[in-house]
Image (cartoon, rainbow, N blue to C red):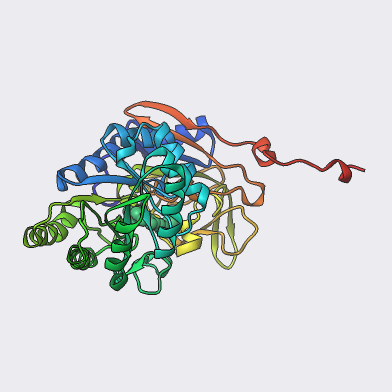
Length: 427
Ligand code: LLP
């Protein structure tokens, strides 16, 4: 094991999450299984509050939309960054106040706009074109929507190209040089009230410099908006802080992020004579390391490579397949045994690319052993699918020695949900 992980310990050769034995958890609840440490989740949120006492922190619900975890985020004072009416329902059900919700997205339908307007949440407007549609819909409903503008700050975030979002070529946001004009147009329209600016430069960013560059560019844009007569009440710098997935890739903490960004934000606000509310939208750095994914070894096969075939594939944890992501793996029932063999861990899905971990040194494995994939809480369950007729796994929340199922395991009937055989195809 590596890094400071207060919630994961090795006891009597077994991996424990808080005070619960992971092997027993797998026996009791079956596998694949997502398991979250409540204390770690709360600690991660509190670290953000300490680092940014004056900022609002909106949890990026796409990272993990489990209701109990959203409820914990609400209890800990977080707002929410949402991307769909579905996420809007989840966060309202979890008790996140409407004043701390930002509805984002680059492709919203008229119905999406209506839902957000009627729910009374702020929206981030991604284009000049969206602004016109939204204003029309709000005016038709007799409402006024508070809006921020999503800016494309043209910052290179040095992360996997599929999750870099602030580049000029990215689909998100309004080019910096068009923001002031768009803001001005919004001030003239009925149905909308522009209140600020929003950006998000990418995800799993391991260096604070791009955040500092993004903050400085946002302050430049804020100045150009003020020059055009706009008032900036809110500046949302998005999420993106990376975490340490790999023993050799340390990640900055929320405190490091604050040291890089706050001096720029605060001094530029002073110089420009404005005092906007700062907003952040962390997802991964809140929830990733709170959660592990347990999976059982079905077959250990000596072929050209040594394969450990487990019961979770990219249907359960898509990140390695999609982004070549590294998740650290531990043998939960042999946790203190020496590394004895090199295994490639593969899933049960009928695709060669169904590889969860490449050439890992692990203790000797056999059928029935439990492997723990660490740091699986962000974009884990939320990206799981039913591909290959696989029901989605269960989720368990651990607090001390107590364990509760927070999402039950799907079964074959879940695969049939919503489907029917047309009568004319019956005969
Ligand atoms: N705000 C906006 C507007 C976003 O698009 C995102 C993530 C976040 C906040 C949260 O970013 P975070 O703090 O989690 O980095 N599925 C990929 C990550 C996709 C990120 C999408 N947007 C993965 O598994 O790495």
